[in-house]
Structure formats: structure tokens, C-alpha cells
Amino acid sequence: MKKTLILIILAISTFQISQGQRLKPNATLNLLMNEKDDARLNFLLDSLTATNKQEDFTTYEIYITMQENKGLYELLTLVDSNALNKRLNKLKKSPKEEDEMLALAFYNFEKEGKNADALEQQMLKKFPTGFVAFQNGMTEIFNETDGPTNEKRYADYVKLFSSNPKLKGHRFFEYVKYYVAMSYMGSDPSKMKPWISKITDSIYRAKAFSYGAYELNNRGKSAYAEPLILEAIAELEKQGRTKSNDYPDFAMTAAKTLLENKKYEEGYAWFMKGYGKNNQNDPSVKKTYLGLLVGTERYKEAFPLMEASLRTGSATPFVKERFRDAYIAVNGDTTGYSKHYNGLRQSFADHVKSKVAKEMLNEPAFNFALKTVDGKTVTLEDYKGKVIVLDFWATWCGPCKASFPAMQQAVNMFKNDTDVEFLFIHTLEQSNQPTKDAENYLKANNYNFNLLMDLRDSGTKKNLAAIGFGLKGIPTKIIIDKKGNIRFRSVGNMGNEELLLHEINAMVELAKQN
Image (cartoon, rainbow, N blue to C red):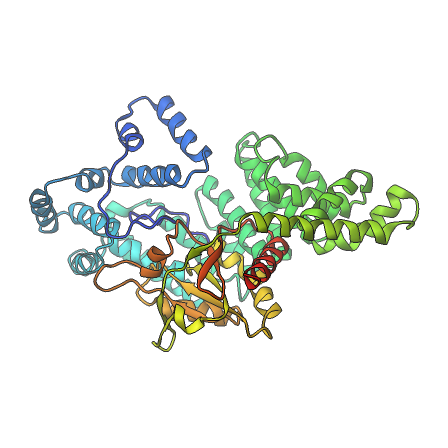
């Protein structure tokens, strides 16, 4: 996804596999839905987001969705199928769009695509300026990447939907201004600030400036990000909201941006304003802090952190480049430098090998049958006698895509090794054209990957390879040895490219030995 969609749509997207299954409310969800005390409710919600357990996060997401449409909970927990169908039919025949939207939310949640599509088309004809059309129009603006085209879309959108009094003052009219701004991110980022400035809601405007800066930083455009994040902070200051939770987040984004722009002293000053107990354990915050210490040549403070980053593989090129200078600043000269540096790198390599060896498995692999982009079927048997690296991913999965630069390096590392094969398996699709979407994404980003498609089965409505390999989430990487046994399984992405590359290398080499 090219930018942040600041909106919870009625349909839920979670990392868990629950295709075609009726909602089974657990005790926690029931407790949340029936809790009347706001303080107690907030405590329960905070507890769910603090556990780092997928099931708790899913419960939290479901609860938030139910608050968008409380009637959905009643439908999803209705046990009698006859009563459910009768209720849905009544909703679909209602003259009120709100009733039809409830039925649509149900079909989306249950992943009943055909029913959802048919009902949506009915609603678009019946209510051409209604909420579903309003939402679809916003989505079109969100997905448009050409700035001038999006400006025209915006003008048409405002003209059409301003005629509906029920939509007067709706937050979507503010969101689309941000989306127009983001459509200029690739071609002319200088036009982003004027468009975000059009947002009239001052609180959202400040957030929009920060969102824009964040997205620009992620695309290596920190020079354009800098005026946006500084404007976001200025907005907070004008609003007297320097004690809000947003302020340290914005300050930290400013610190990261200024670090990238090599304005180290300014970045350090903003870092100190943003640093606190709520972010002190965040790896990205620690990385920014180290970069700014190095940039401002606070080498005595930085040196032990630089050593630690080299041992763990988290050192940035900037830290590696300045490590010699830091060594001299701490030790007086270069005596023993090479031995010390090489020792740190060897400690990292040994640590990775030891860690990976302890995680080794020995279980038979699922005999998959997957489609190539040309529609051909390939199976596990086709790769017999090779070590296979399976990388399960999806175009909607940010952590999956974030791991791809390191995975491309891994592919390049083994490109001349005929005993090793990398397969990038797209699964858990959320669009109607997943093969095209996956292929276009890889081409657009110059990834030279062997793409296979784990498409949802037409009968079972499930992604069979994902089920067969027992995926709990994505990204998931599975290494299979030459005999067809799973040797390693890795779930998630820690954001450390060097560590991931070394782990893949160690896993493959160990798998080749067995």
C-alpha cells in the first residue's frame, strides 16, 4: 500500500487464518462488548494491546470493528442459520442504506465475496450519493498515484457528495485532502504541504503532516519530510498540545528526519525532547539515538553502543564508517583496532550460527501444489534434491515487503548454487487480482524472485499451502532440506536486514549438511 489509510473499514484484516469461519466470541470479547464503565473498558483495551499476543490483538481489532457497527456483533453471533438468513434478507430489502450496510459488513467479515459484491452493486445503483459510494470514491482517491488526476477526482468527489446533507462535515472530506497530497509523493513532493494545509480539522492536520513525513522518510525523501514534520510540531505548539502523546512521537520523527539530513545537532535536540519511558525500549529509537551520538561525535557515549550494534548485526553503514574514529577517540590511537573490529564481527557470526543451530527442526514438509504466474502447477517433488527457501508473503503485508531487500541479497548470494532454490509464495490474498498485484509489485521494485501463487481454493475458499504448512502469520520463511523435511521455520520480521541475511545463510548451510 502506497500510503497510510487512516480509517477502519468495516471488514477486518488480521494476520491470522480464519477464512470462511463464523465468529466465535471469546470471554474477553463478550466482556468488552458488555462493559459499561469507561475506565474499566479502557483498562481492558490497553491490556490487550500490551500483551503482544496475536489472539489478543485480533480480539482488540474485532472489538473496534464492532464499535463501527454494533449490529454486526449480533449477526455474527446468531446461531440459528434460518434466523440469520431471514434477518439478512430483510436488511437487503430495506429502503434504508444503513440496513443494507449492516448486511454488507456481515458479508465482508465472513469473506462472502460474491454476496458482498452483488449487494454493493445494488447499493451503488440505489444510493448513488450514499455512504458506500462515498467510501468507494474516497478509496479511488486513495489508490490514485497521479497528482493532477487526483486533483480532478477530488473536485468531482466534493461536488457530488456535498449534495447529500447526511454527509455534511464528514471526516472523509478531510481524509481525501491528505490522499491527494500523498499522490504527489512520487512525482512532486513539494505539493504535499499545500494540500495537507487545506485540512480544516487542526488535530487531524497535525497528524497528516506527521504521516506525510513518515511516508517520505520511508521512501528516502527526508529532505521533503523535514518541513512537514516541523510543521506538524508547530501545529501542536499553536494548539497548546505539547503535553499530548503526539508531541514525543512527532519530536522523534523530527530527530530521525534530521539524522537522515545530516543535521545532527538539531536532530539530537529533538531526540531529547521526544525520548521518554514510552519509547526508550523501541529498537528504532535506540538506532536513532546511536546515529545522532555518532553524528554529533559524542563518541565516549556512543562507543559501547556501537560495539553492541556490531555484535548483533544492527550497525548501520554510518556506524561502521565512524567506528574507527570512535575507537581512536576512546583509545587514543588505532593500536589494536583491526583485531577488535574483526573480533566483534566474528562474535556476531558465531552468535547467529549458534542461535540457528538450536532452532533446527526435522519434520516432513507439506507436498504443496502452487501456480506460477503463467498458470503452471509446481509441487514439492519438482524441487527434490534441493534445499528450498519458502518465503510466504502478501502485497498487503508491510513486514513481508520490508524483508525483501535482505531477501534479494540472499537470492543473489546463492544464485550460482544449483542446490538451493528460493520460492516466494504469495498467499492470503485480499484482492480480486492477486497474481497481477504480486507480479507488478516485484517488477516495480526490481526484485528478481521466483514467484508462486497460493491462491484461495475455489471449493474450500482456503489457501491450501498456508494451511498445509500451518502458518500462524506472515511473513513466514521455511527452509526445507534435500530430503523434503522442514529444517527451519521463521515467523515475522524484526527489521534487521543484516541479521536476517546471516540467519538465512546459516539455515541454508545447515540444511545442506542434513
